[in-house]
Length: 366
Image: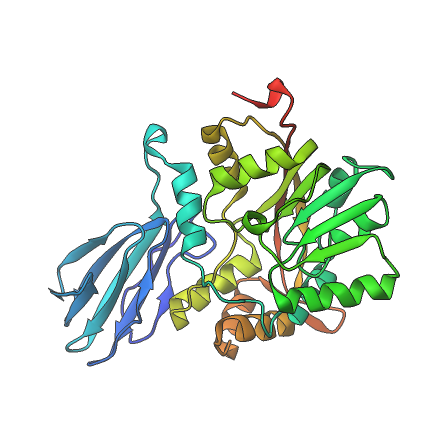
């Protein structure tokens, strides 16, 4: 470990790759400039002002700050910083770990889903998403666990199939599959891929789980990174009513040293872009416990490097942002952007979690 000098007129992160949960950086704002409105999400933040004068914009208030001051920003708080004169400060961000008994896991999940746009966020992105899945080998080794719940007699309900990463291999094994996909963009890609594979045992319905009616019973109800409902308790109850076998969720998490996590973090810090993503699987597991379900969980480590040009195109289309070369340079210096087969890739690693329970089995209930 070496000390870092806090001077200069540039942004730079502090101790990237050395800290675990904590993130920090040095910021210089010229007179009249603003860092950009953003939210702390599930993190809390401290701003330590080194020199200059400015304001913290928070909740409709403009709070004066100057060198020698510190300012605390709680979780889930939209805020910004504007410089009245050249302003230098350090931000320190870390996960807000409340006491376990105070955590409303179901509420955290519902708030995250409610904060998303009501529109079709996949419009213009579905093809890129499909390319991402193919390039990274998704769903990878977790697919075998999901396939183990079904056989050639099974009837399956898939919630949010996307472009078919699980749908296609499942359809080749089971008797019938019903897929609930509200996104027109995703449905178009999925229907094309089903036709290409000659699969005619899949019915794709343009509805959400909470809108689906009279579908009958299923041997497996599956939601892979797709249980985007605003009321988790109601969704789980609905899954249980339709399932006579296994309810299965596939969730995930990224780990420190993951290139996609680092690149998304840079987009937030440099561009003020709120890059979305699934909650870590432990949130879902804890929420299920609060609902009264004690699921089984299997975790599989994955490495799925992402072509850099694909990341740039996907994030650009998804969030309307230009991913500049300066991000690539910083990721390369950190060893997170690597050359392979004549193409630059983000070094990506994480974990998939298969979470399952049987509604009719008391072993899975509390």
